[in-house]
Amino acid sequence: MFEPFEYQFFVRGILAATLVGGLCGMIGVYIVLKRMSYIGHGLSHAVLGGAVVSFVLSINFLIGATVWGFFCAQLIALTAKKRKIAADAAIGVITTASFAMGIVLISRYKSFTRDFEAALFGNILGVSVVDLMAIVVTTLLTIAVLFVAYKYFLFATFDGEVAQFYGVPTGWVETLFSLVLAATIVVSMQVLGVLLIAGATVIPPVSARMLSDRFRTVLLLSTGLGAACGFVGIYLSFFIDVSSGAAVVLVEAGVFALVMAYSNFRPRRVPNQLENVHRADVGRLSPGEPD
Figure 1 (spheres, one colour):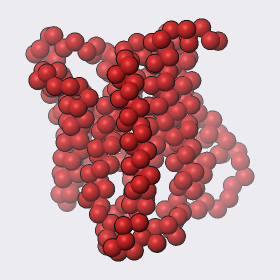
Figure 2: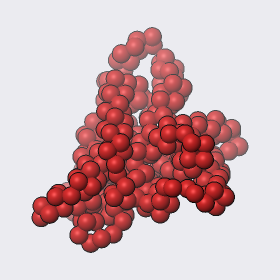
Figure 3: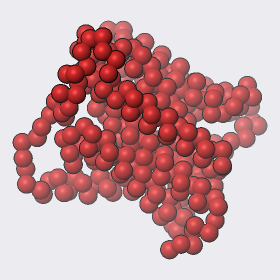
């Protein structure tokens, strides 16, 4: 049972997967409740383009890919404000174009040193100390941001128009969330791969939502489920010799199936609307109050 922990690369990989799983589960709650599940899938593809551009321009991968992902997220938000363009259409156009640009650059510059297959599907062998430190820093900063601006994010997630009426700076909230999301996707690439990040940001929050109607409980459950599935997925991938990212997402899918079965068999009750939970907290956020 403990043989894998004798290898340093595995210890780094399982720590990274646990942190990334929890981080994606935490961010995913806001993504799912905003009904923008597709943005995680799209931005992960867009970030690949930023990673290749960073390599070509000799820019630090973490900085370049994060800035690129943030730029794409902002461009999606601006495009989606056009009444004739739906949000999912804007995501499809911009992220696909960014992904295509990455493919073009890879085919043009044959010396792209990062393993393309690892970028797509994840590879725990490639998790370095620097990658692990970046994941830790991103996780701590994300927790700090969501904790400090908890009410702002809560209000803007459920009803942006009303939040703006009450003086919540929704523009800044959306910008900050885009930056956090881009950073999360960048640090998750090495563990999960760009093709599987969407699953890690959607499955845990959906599973948690079926277990509770309280927002804080859903947030904690989703984070815990993501972290646990990351740990178990990497542990299993060592023994069955499969892609680390795929193993994590399959474990999350298995948990989702179990939760769905449990939800179908447990006694039914009248569900509370998650949007109404913590209404008292949101109500205390009157115009002009920073709290």
